[in-house]
Amino acid sequence: MKVFINYFIFALLAMLCVNNSYAQGNRCESIQPFCSGDAQFVFPNSNQFNSNVAQAEVGPDYSCLKEQPYPAWFFLKIDKPGELNFEISQTVNADGSGLTLDVDYIAWGPFEDGEDFCTDESLSLANVAGCSYLYAPLEIFNIANAKRGEIYVVLITNFSQKEGFISLDQVNSNDPNAGSTDCSIVSLLGEDLSLCGESSVELQVNNVYADSYKWLKKDITTGNYEEIPSQTNSSLLVTTSGDYRVVVLNNLTNSEVSDDISIQLSEPPVATVPQDLSNCSLSETAIFNLNNVNSELTTIYNTAGDSFTSNFYESQLDLTNNIPINNASNFEGTNDQIILATIINNRTGCVSNAVSFQLKLQDAIQIDLNEITSVCTTAAGDLIEAFSLGQDLGNGYSYNWTPDNDPDGDGLENPVFIVSSLTGNNEYSLEIEDLSSGCIANFRTTILTYSPPVSIDINISGNDFENGYNVEAIVKKGLGADPSLEYRLDSGNWQQSNTFNNVAAGNHSVAARVVGGCGSLRSQNFVLVGYPRFFTPNSDGYNDTWNVITDVNLVFKRLFIFDRYGKLLKQLDPKSGGWDGTFNGNALPADDYWFSVELENVSKATQQFKGHFTLKR
Image 1 (cartoon, rainbow, N blue to C red):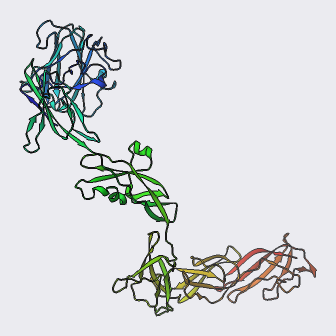
Image 2 (image 1 turned 45 degrees about the vertical axis):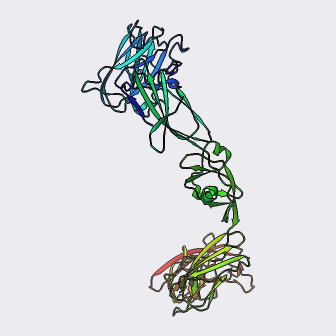
Image 3 (image 1 turned 30 degrees about the horizontal axis):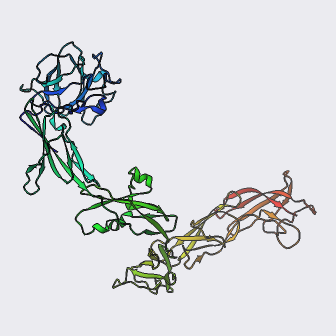
């Protein structure tokens, strides 16, 4: 939109409407822009005969204005920086003749562009830029060092309360350091209009006090504005899209002002109901790309030149409040969830009717195919036996295998892929489609080959007389890219760690294999020297005597057995058959008993250990 001002740039522009109620009353509802241009800004005042707002509202700080009768609110914006000097006067006649009337004013500013300048906080004492409450028909308002873009609010009051005209005149426009006001903020017709579903719109001239009007419409062929016959009122009913212009004339000052506006009357688009959107999931939700229905929503426009944007909503309330789904391409939805959709014509901005579709969840395809498939080979790296990949789900599914070593890349269509030899590129991909639901699942596995461990060495630390034995298996691995091994002590459970803690005394062995199983290797048996924690001398042939567990690498020098009171019961030769639970031929009761043992290890060092055991009867 562009404002054209001929001769006097702003004589009588931004004034009251014909009913003389413009810019009068509450500030935020009625405040209007004005610019001074090259001429006076003249407008009919507010008085007791044309206004029911006798006093300005409570809230702003009016500084020097003790009273604020019949207020008129305006704001101006600085265009050219510099100094602006204004004269505000009031007379009974528009041309400044006749009796003079008392006028007062107050101004606030400066405010930044975009700042809410009509609040009580903005119109405060700290922001007062000028004020006068003199008993005089002429007031002076100066703005020094004004900067481009600054905004000032001006309240002009009619202390006389009589009918008349107020003029505001920038009197220093021709000075070298003079600033100027921005007339682009003033509009006769308002912003361009793009209306949807409307067959007509009435244009109304605003912000002007005029005597005659002329309406014109641009000819799209010649680009010239042609006058519309018989249209001389301040309003025009427009029924067709186009560019319009109004020219207004004020006979008092012989000034002419014009303004243009573009009108676009458009029919809203019609959205087509799309098919329900399906996806596959193992849970109660799935990720949907709602934009997949865009082409269906615009089915009747797919051959037209206009482009469209789709919006999706989770509920009618969201649609009413215009809260669209902001992640339409990655939306987490549930089964049977209803989604509302509209389309927007990007040229006209018109929004369609809302249509709905449902989200459908299908069971995702599952098969037993791990990301890693471990395969055992010989020590030379040859496959020991053929193996299969995949799973036959029965009828109703299509399969497409694509091994990375497939020479022609056409894949295989069998449910199960048989691998009979290894070729080096051991990557296999599988796509399965459920022919009834359309669900597609993709799987991939990497073949890792391993041979069994080559050897196992045992590292033993600790002893049975203190915190127990710790056994560490040292394994020389077979073929394979650093295969993961698992270990087992005797016939216990397989574990990832190669260390076993708190191992009891006795005969043991450790086995190792590649994770997943691949020809386990077992170590030689080894003996851990120690002592049993209990014995049962009941002549049943099991645990009838107690003795330490010996080893050829250890020499036991002395072994003593005591009762709980420290009484020596037996000095025992570890090489003998053991203690039978008697003292002086008498059977001792079931209880805990203590022992002390001295032994010499392979390095000839002597160590003494103490412990206790239980006699059970």
